[in-house]
Length: 76
Image 1 (cartoon, helix red, strand yellow):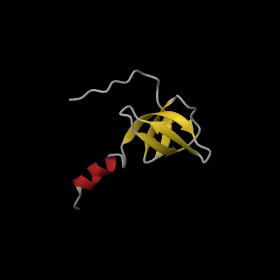
Image 2 (cartoon, rainbow, N blue to C red):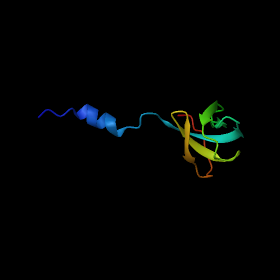
Image 3 (cartoon, rainbow, N blue to C red):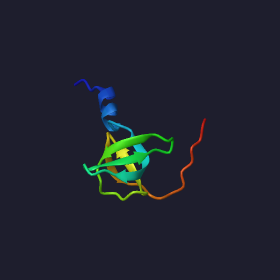
Image 4 (tube, rainbow, N blue to C red):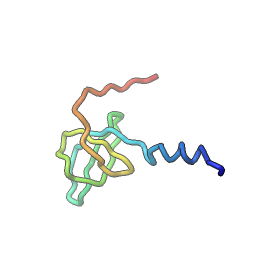
């Protein structure tokens, strides 16, 4: 029996990266406008999190509320 180790490993990885963002506006169409710590602005599906709160965004959707912890942007 041949096992494709790469496919098994790849199946463990998330399909899209999870992005940390802050909700800046709730749009009337079920989406929210969010901003990333780098200054990028995204329009994500989901309008259940109030403006000013931090969220996780994956594949264009808000997947959950992020804790209100200090964030640092480091350049390596």
